[in-house]
Image 1 (tube, rainbow, N blue to C red):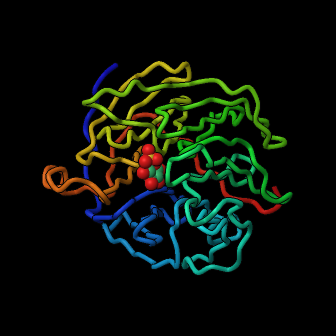
Image 2 (cartoon, helix red, strand yellow):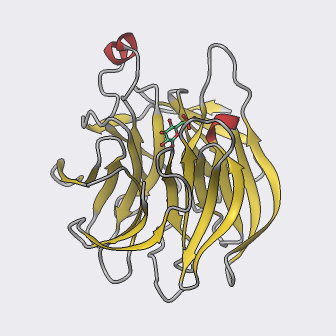
Length: 297
Ligand SMILES: O=C1O[C@H](CS(=O)(=O)O)[C@@H](O)[C@H](O)[C@H]1O
């Protein structure tokens, strides 16, 4: 395993809980959210500007919609948003108790379905689930979770990666692109926490070599794993809580990263003053292109 170069800050956003970076190839812009700050953001790397749109509730994940705008995972459910982030309608209500549950990590599958999971905020009893939304409606794919996270697909779309963050585990499933069904769950990566390193797998993305990049929340780094599960490299982040990676740039060779600052100790924020920012790392292998949500899928 090699230690690669560190990420550098491209937007000192001071987000509370930055999440879900999402590259728009058409606009050459990076969308991202601040879950607890309740904003949908558009970062333009060409001039370094960021535009934030206030949302009425926690917004956690996004997919670009093939007809423009977004599908978003929020606390109350999955919503259709227009290109400016205004809600157009509720697609599927959160089936869980929204007093202690919200949607968390999500992304479109290669066929255009939207997969999104929830977060059991009390971390009490594995009440979070992974769901699939498509023209058939909302279906439950997995349950017994604490924080559904780390969704990403292999280049052929036949493997789904999925993390349950507080358990330090990333699973791998066989995925049927024709039906959106899962099978054959196995452990892909299980981190061994130590007193000095509580880093745990958060948001992720896969590159064209099929390697899985994962942000280690409270680990201050991003790791790259081979399809075999072998750790290939890790890259330091000048923030203790990286939350999710996404490939962007015209060649998809820029790895963007969101981070969190909410609830962090004052001494940590003094040491890492750009916590909550958006970071970037040039990489050699391009990332996979991000599919669009297709309501006909
Ligand atoms: O993606 C997320 O994960 C973190 C980590 S954990 O669930 O607490 O282990 C969580 O705090 C954050 O709210 C969530 O968005």
